[in-house]
Length: 125
Image (tube, rainbow, N blue to C red):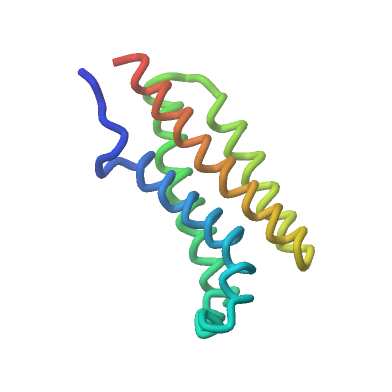
């Protein structure tokens, strides 16, 4: 059976949350610098960033651990997600451009982990 990635599964939701996090982190400095769009500065709120991180951790935990334990028993996706979350955690302790870059890279790594997990699941079906 061919499993579609774009559906309501945990890997798609996790990938989407992680990519939104990465886009949010990488695009925000550019959006806020435009005078007409400066009303979007509310997006710079740490609570919003924390929500992105929370949902990324939630979806990654549910999806990747379940895929590992119940189906493919390969740690590739878990290694990538762990690196991604460590980079995101590191971004919380720095400011400015380094924060933006680290958070964006971490978000992309978490999204990549969901793609890896999805491919591993697809390979065994």
